[in-house]
Length: 259
Image (tube, rainbow, N blue to C red):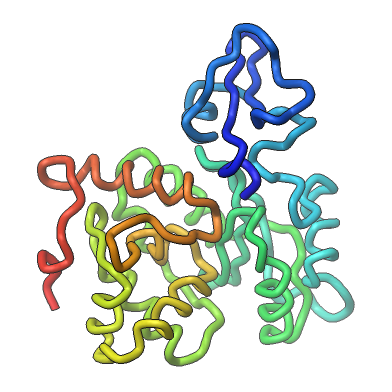
């Protein structure tokens, strides 16, 4: 994300936060902010000029209906899936659901979102349109509870689109408890494929259901934070939120997870 390289400025008096390079960033009274999550938690609004949350990415500044067309979820045919924008402390997320399960949940700035939406529309053989459903309401409530520290509320029915190998990896990710982090090699070993570390890492990166399939709980081989489609600051925030609830308030080692 652009913000990861430029940083952010919080201007409490103006009630907004900006990228440090924003032409409208206040020259006086602004404080350097660690990440957008801190600014949002303080009740500050993202600057409409520099868009520090990348909300304009993928056309969402034109509204949900326009964004879906741009992403490839529109067109002809019956409406088979419904999409909604759900607010979170880390910015809006695009949720696509059917009556039985959640098919996609991504931050709106995700670079591969257009590819994911097009693939989902093709597989469902129809059109994705704005709309709410009982599943969307369950998801919205689950996300609200998750960010309040009730991580069990994120245990919802999912039906992501993926290959058998990807589905296997994503299933294993859901078995990692909150407050626990493992490495790519651990993930490959846990699916019985210790020789497939790169393939497991690729499947982790292709996860189309953020937070509920917790790909953010995977670290690099040296234990550092690595690429996250929603931005590393979001990954850091999620891990901090979850580790605060773990015993001792710290992340647990991979060997604490039962096989």
